[in-house]
Length: 303
Image 1: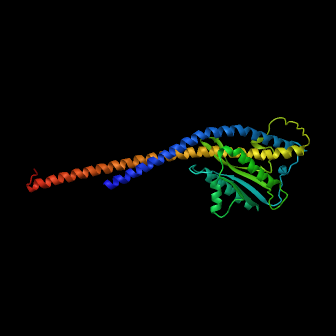
Image 2 (image 1 turned 120 degrees about the vertical axis):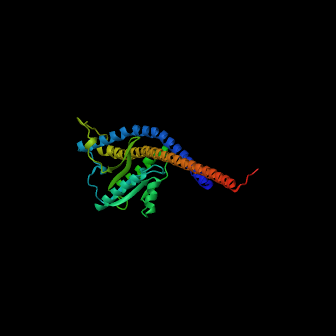
């Protein structure tokens, strides 16, 4: 019985140690969500506004011309997919959901006869493809949360160069981004967005009412050549920030569940240890009483 108690106590110590780690991770994630949400709130209006402005110009201006506005950019059949995953684990299904969505998108594009080039942010996505001998065309990992704007600009510069390239060996016809949209601490969903070619104004991004009259200085081509790459950059940075906030929320929930599970295990093994201790005490009492009865039956008395 003593060995059984030692085993239960060992498991209790182990569960308590893990519970402390899970609780600390939960508190860290909870503290970081507020900052991440504030960054998302600060960047989303700009990204939405520039999307609506460019969409309105593209739809209602006959002078607007840019390679990203052409709805049929078919040239090489090569499509870029930017997949945003986590750099660390212990975040539940956050990275696996993004990878699953990216794989479904890639399979759909291949069914259309297109060649898919994967561009991956985060160790989880990078290791997923390298483990399967399908290394991405380029990956950005590891990355620091405070360097997200610089990371977004670097990614945008790389992809804009390929999208605008005249070299068929590197040219990309289209660009999709797979990230996680942050709604609140309890709701996040994986989303696929097509950045290039730009969609005309429609759906929930439709500008209601009278459209403004745009005057371009020096001309529409020059203005759009400077504005549209900034649009791609702003959307990528915003998606990165939303994905980071979603990762923190997912990690908080996962660590809360892990903490509760550890507490359940502690309670379970504490009860088993108490039962084993009680059984040991009962056995010792039984042995003492049995020995006393045996002595009494033999007529001997210890003095």
